[in-house]
Image (cartoon, rainbow, N blue to C red; front, side, top):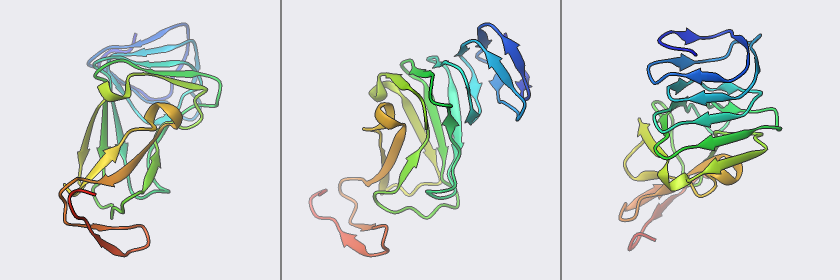
Length: 168
């Protein structure tokens, strides 16, 4: 069980439990044979095992642009489970948003399970006129930017400005 310190370059067999006060991040030579059950902080990277993000789990992501952002990835054969109240923390500081921009946060998982509406998402550095659309979070691991109803103007991906009427 990982507790307190960040476990950066781990090799472990069996179930790996991450305590609420712990952080797990994988280095380039990490080999995990067995599922990861997290109640703590999970750093982005590629996990080659089933991963359960518990109700007190936190996953921070830095978003620089649509092609350059952190991911919690898999090699394609494992299951990612979100328990109610899993927390995703997205830092958009320095990013210039566009309506419709998409971010693949959880690529290559064989399946993503849980209740997307019960996942807690916080953002920093994102203008209040934008919100995240999580419709596809459990489908393909993607979130996208949408305009908040009532915001008067939105900048589209091609740079054009669009006036929003009646939140549409």
